[in-house]
Image 1 (tube, rainbow, N blue to C red):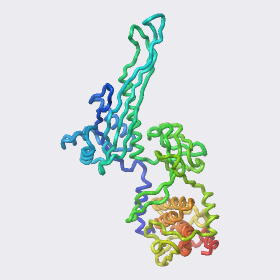
Image 2: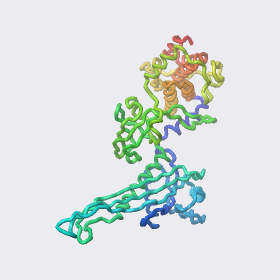
Image 3: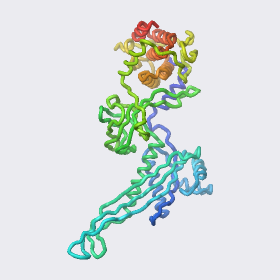
Image 4: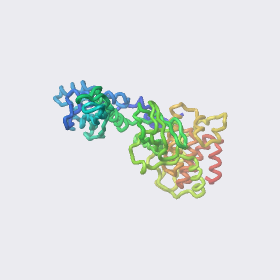
Length: 471
């Protein structure tokens, strides 16, 4: 049975990592009425400002990433407190209004451009004053949006976008009148929607990040489940990452999980619910179905991409196990686990035998993987529930990834955490021994092997490792 002290770790892992995006808490926001900062004779009145405010509110709701406070309710709160509810408010007023409304962020916005422009001329026919009008009418709308954090009063992000709509102007020209020319109002509406859509998608990506998934991958083409409905656009960069080591709070809860980039993608083809991407950095052939994907806004050239190839693991084993590395400090974060309880920083770690938990039932496996494999298929044989199994897999995968990249302290801590989730987990006792050996802590490695073989005396990887390195 899992020990009681692992329950906090297990539950926090599940809450943080296993909940689907739809079950995660949404950011609560409110949109203040836009103000008019447009110049040059733009036809912007109060109705236009309210219309743009409502349009942005609707688009934010449609992203699925926000809980949006209704404008009418916000205005009611403002009236009760004698506060303004428009984009003209200062930051202090916006923060006060947001706290009264119980939201996390207040969105303020300004219309900076709202124009139409017609260009072109007349192709003469037959004589003066008679011909065909040619050209186009273009509408452009620009908006400037800020999101104020209600808790801190700081601007969390600012977004400036422009939307453009145009149509060709074709009609008969007679005596100075163009017949068949469309009205500009429809173009302004289209340009406004184009601009608002861009803003809502950027806010969703920056303030309410959602992890998407790799659906399929080859060396050159990767398909992901982020489509136009999720804000994906052609040319957008996407980051494929793996979760490595959990960041553990003082109470044993999981505060966050470290991420490492394994590939950068560029969206080439966008459908409603999926996109096809090319590989900008990394190896598409190393990606797997189910790998996590998120929007990337950093510098692609500076982003460090890590290989996840198992060949690297073999190279590390060959190069360093014959001559274990010099002693290194123990992991910087540790939970109440077996060897770390008495391990000093650096050197061999003495572990009291009494600190090692009592053996758990040895699982049986008709396939023999339980006795011969050093991979995660061993976990399938454990007599544990699905939640415990998931917690083990999360920590084990992080440890394996860190080990394969030569980060042995991180790997050790992750294998240790996996063992904490279930004290019959001889697979991670074995891998903790390997990580401790890499760190030069031979006695500690030996005791982890003792534990693995105490749980499953027939476990061949532990037997072979002990014989090979005389631990």
